[in-house]
Image 1 (spheres, rainbow, N blue to C red):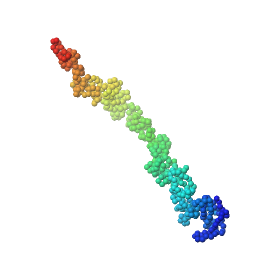
Image 2: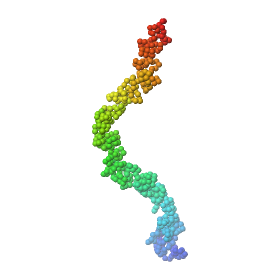
Image 3: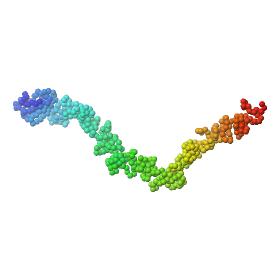
Length: 510
């Protein structure tokens, strides 16, 4: 709405600064155009050089307080607002004077130290023009709205898609303690511990108050894009950095490629460099040709000569053919000159403990002798069994089981005990000969048997006319019978007869 001075009823008055006298101004004002944006009650402005203080009484569309009025005098442009008492005041974000000539800001605004009309606490409040009020700003991730000249978000946050957030989330993090956005820290800078490591740039984490890569052994910091990248593996490209190279583990960067130094080999299992092995040193079978110094190879995770039939000579770093079983060897060179696990004993290659080992001619090595009831080699013979046992049908056993028993204490075969000799029980009976039993530690027969000294066994005690042993005449038949001509009879067969009902021998009269 535009109003020109010649179209309005007006009262012009000249007014001094003290306000002690008033008079009508007869000289007309220069033409002034007034734009009423939202209605006002009383307008007070310095508008012309003719009348420095001019009052204009207007009736506008609205009498609401706190509305903006723009006045153009042809050469000046003024922006004012009307306060509750009808005086002209400075609007939101307009300049004001705090020391020389204080001027009033529209309520509830204050003239702050920077000579700007604003809410009392601009960091925590924003000005809502429609309601002419100062409202608490929204904080992180709360709903917000965009308004002219300001943001409804707290501190240095911005309203993005209706949500309060940092202006550049990739480079800033939200600090809940002072409710502001701060620049994210970069590599090896101090960082506060926050949820999800948000205080560090890109994919770095805050560990012990320092920004770094999450897995330093597997990652390095790229200063060009300020992020953590995977370290290079064997034969992958690399470059040197402040704390070494971009290579994985202890590998080094040589001519732009990850590798190991001259005394190491690459371990593909853990992507690292291991020390190259010498004779009998540990090695990696997966890197058989490189994990040992030539001429050695990795076998069973240790450095050996390529073939089991060879021995290593440390004097000239060579692998030579080993000396076989029972052939002459050099005790000065030690056991290494003998084939496989043979030892040089008194100038002859032999098993280290012949009593406990035997030589296998097929793989030219020494093996542990088998013990009682264990499998043995019938091709090689009895030497595969321990002590004096023999290999019978592929099983180690005593040579004459009827006359021998296996002693588990010294793993040997011993002669079985004869009649009235000492004995003890074993897994398969006793140590007694034949069918004798061990009674109270002595070999003997049970109550229905007698000892036959001819065959060192127990025979069934005979009844009348049963066979018997004349060598055991008094014991091989039940009394009163005696052994006569290898048959049980009465003591005088021609003169006596046997009564079986009474088990007696009687005279020959009937």
